[in-house]
Length: 66
Length: 385
Image: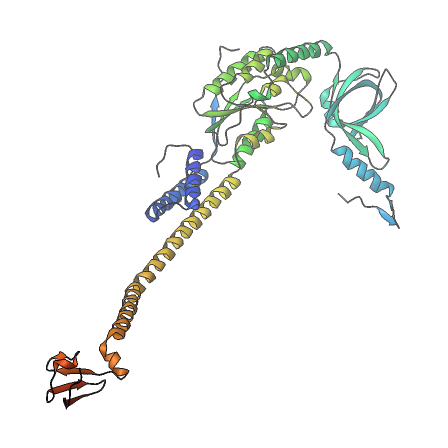
């Protein structure tokens, strides 16, 4: 999934899908589509967590303020 | 630490002196760090000792309190204290268990002469509090997962290092934006405000940490400066204040959205723990798989039941029809004249017609008599109408 949304938003969507499926009032075709989407979201979230290294950016304090 | 357990003499619980002292010592150890004011007496420092001892005296009542401080920490303060001087000692209550003696274990000692500063600070605090700057209602929740954490720090390698290390350890995918500026001395408040603004303006920074290790009262003053406190309070992103040690409360602590006692604690506040996040995600996935399986199983079971009903339906239909037919057959049977013949009646025909009236025939006519089983041919002898 190439998704520009934040991790939190992706995780929230995953939670919503799980809750809908657990409630059970979903037709089979839709349930399978939701499950696939949920799996994708899970993988995207995990990749985002594992992929990166801590990045450090140095910001020069503004001169005029001194 | 060994447990404090009494010896039992019947119903009586008895503590040894050392276990009593240990119990009291661990109780005292849980008390918070405090500042204590008093006059220095009996200052004893020796190059061969690891600890410096002194006694604080309350000039009003003569009450005394033993104080201990590590020799290196004491030497670093470069106080050259004289007996009788008034000092502020920051520390925690501690029990010397061997002797059962209470002492204040000091982390720092300051010469008092800061009365005017303190007073001004207290006034400022009250004024800003009255404005509502420190109100809990103003405190914003910290983002659960910031795109970047802004760190405002002085040339304080330890605080910065602790903070960055904690963030990296908890959440390796984090990004930090560090702005280093002079945080003490003349001009520090303006520089702090400038750096705060620059960090808050960074497009990814979602939360900001003020990281400043311990320092003397004067060193921490910029963090209580009105412009800094206002800048913290009106900052466009939530601010965590990790300034000074536990016993210090610079005003920026009160204005910040959250306060952390140490840079490490601040790190734990601003980023989530990767392990916990992964556990939560895996929990979601398990529930996802389980939920879809339950749904599919439910639908499969429903389908199976429908299939079974479909298979038995024709048979049921036929059986129902057959039993209806049997019923009709029985009723038909009941009405049949053949059944009447079975009870001994006979049908008499003259030609094709059943005979109902004796007058319809004359002697000598041929009759045909049908019985339940077989039939007879007969001739009329006489007629009695």
